[in-house]
Length: 231
Image (cartoon, rainbow, N blue to C red; front, side, top):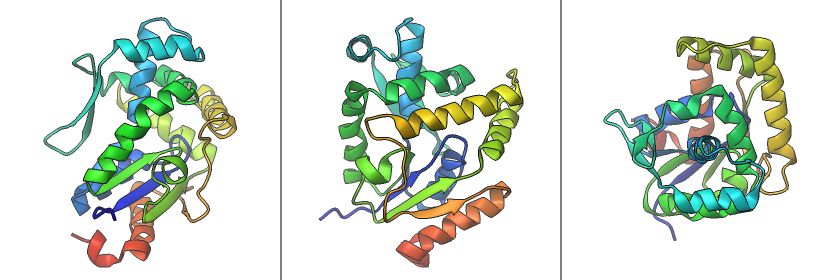
């Protein structure tokens, strides 16, 4: 029996998974694993090589040519490295979201990353977020959360995030992209985005970060107990 606890947080793009999961992991002393960042790194590698992100064979060749690793900064934040380069900021470009969604639908990519993700959960207490953590990657996780929010809310958050980073952003286009990303993630044949049957739904529509964070914390406390969550 695994001696470590696993918390799986799934949900659509822009629901606040990464921000809140990272903060809770730091509070609880858990390892935070942002699987979306890993797929974004694969997407960046594919984009830089001019490869079609929907071509399984071409993408699989890229996987065999690159070195993708993960580390953690002094603040506990996850850092992604592509061939030794820290690409933690580069993978957050809006364009890379499209590539990440496309490559995440490919069997070779998911197989390449599945064992790596499970290995982390077998050797650490983890909070892992993504699209299929509770359904595919960690189906035995003690806590499963489906974190969601209205598409307009998520687009607005993404828009403000990009402006804060000094990037150009168009709210209408971002909303269209969010809706399209949802469609791609939910309709893909391999590991589609969906709520695990035993997951707790946490809806952050219309809520600020602090209120959303508290909602998520309470949902986890209800499963693990207050002592496991509170520092």
